[in-house]
Length: 574
Image (cartoon, rainbow, N blue to C red; front, side, top):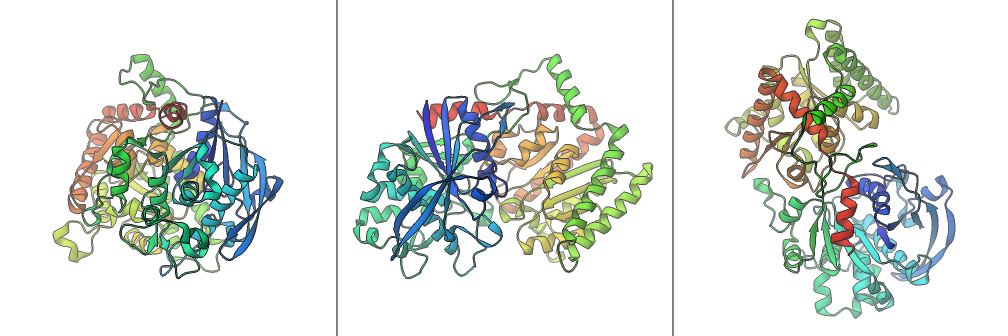
C-alpha cells in the first residue's frame, strides 16, 4: 500500500471549491488510485467555510515564522466526501484543511480578485503561507508520513522550494516529489523583494541563506527581479507531470502568441532540461463513465476494431441519451425553457437587468415561438460550454476574413453566417462566463445574428443538457492542456470541432469521432476552422447516416480514470 499526499488549491469533491480542471482531477483521481492500492489524502486551504460545512475535526495547530510574525494555522481533518468513479465508491482517503484569515476571500472564493498592477499578490501570499503550514504540519506529525508528495500547479510551488532549500524541512526529501502542471499560463509570479507580497517579505531568513545557484532556480527567466513558483515546481521536483502527452511536447517549445501558439510560456528551457533528464511524463486526464469499464485497452482508449454488437449496443445507448427526431422538438423546447429560467434566476439576484441577458431572453423567446410551429423548429444544435478567456475563445474573436477586418466581422460572425447558410434552422448556444470585454463582444454578435444564443453565466444542469442535446460541440481553444468539455460532449454522443492541440489532439480522432483543425498562425487557423465547419455541416446534410456513425464512435470512446490510475502508478509513483 502506497500513501500519497496531494497539495492543491481546488477540489470538486467539496462544494464551492472548483474553478478549473484541477478540481476535477482532485475529485476523481484519488478514488481511482485506491483501486491500485494507493491511498491519497489531500491538503488544501479551508477558505473560511469547508471545515464548518462538513463538520471536520480540529486536529491541532502549527506555528510558523512568516515574514516578521509567528502565524498560527489551524488544521482540521475530514473524510473525503463520497464520490463514485466508474461505478466504484472509495472512502478511505482524507482531506486536511488549513485555516488562517489570509486564506479567506470575499464570498469564500478559492482565488482573490486581484488587480492588474499587482497580479497574484493576495493569492501568492495566501499560498506561500499555506505551503509553509503544510510543510510544518508534516514535520510536526499532524500529517502522517507518506511515500509521495504530489503538488499541483504554481499554488504548491513554494512547498517544492522549501523541501529543496530550507534546512528546517529537509525531512520532506525522504518522500518522492511529483509536480503536476494543469495550466502553464498561470505561474504566480511575484517580486523577490520591495513588496509586502514578495519572497523576501515571506521568507526573510531563507532569502539570506540561499546561494546564487539556488536563487537561479527561483527567479523568473523573463523578470530577473521576480520569483516564479511554477518554475520552482518544475526544476526542484523529482518528476513533472503534464495532463496530456501532446501538451507535454508543446511546453518544450517557446510560445508565439502573435501566431497563435502557446507552448512553454517562458519556461521552455526548464521544461526541456527536465525532459532531457527523462523526468517529464504526459498522462491524459480521465472522464467518469457511470458503470462502464468496457472497451478499454491499456492506453485508456477503446480499441479501433468495432464489431456489429458493439455498434448496436452503442447506438442503443446513444438513442437513450439523445432523443430522436420524434421527441427532439419537445427536448429542445424544454432546453429553451430551462435556459430562460436560468437567466431569469440570475436576473433575480441583481438590481438591474443586463443588456446581455435581455438579448438572450429575446432570442430564446423567438426560437420558442418558432418551435411551436413544427415546420420551422430547430433542427440542428451547435453548442459550446466554457470560460470566456483568450485560452478558450481567442480564435473566435479574430477578424475574418482578414482582408475585410475594417468591417468589424469576427470569426464568430463568419461561423454563424455559415451555420445559417447550411442549416437555416440551426442554432448555436454558447454558455460561459469570464472576462467582461469578451462577454461584451459576444453580446454584440448575439444582437446581429438570430441563430446565436449567448448565455452569459454558468449553470451545471443547463451545461449537462447542452452536452446531451447538442449535435456539434465547438472547442477552438488556442491551447488545451487536457480539456474536459470535449470528453463530456463525446460521452453524450456529440461530435466536436476542436483545435488540434494538447489534450484535444489526444482525445479526438479526426473525421472519426470529430474534426480537428490546425494552422501556422491565427489567420490560417481561422480559415481551417471555417473549412472544417463547412465539411461537418455538409456531412450532416448530405450523409446523415455517416454523421450518425461518427456520433456513435464518439460515444464509444473511453478515457477511464482506472486506466489513468495505472499510468500514475507505473510512471509517476514507481
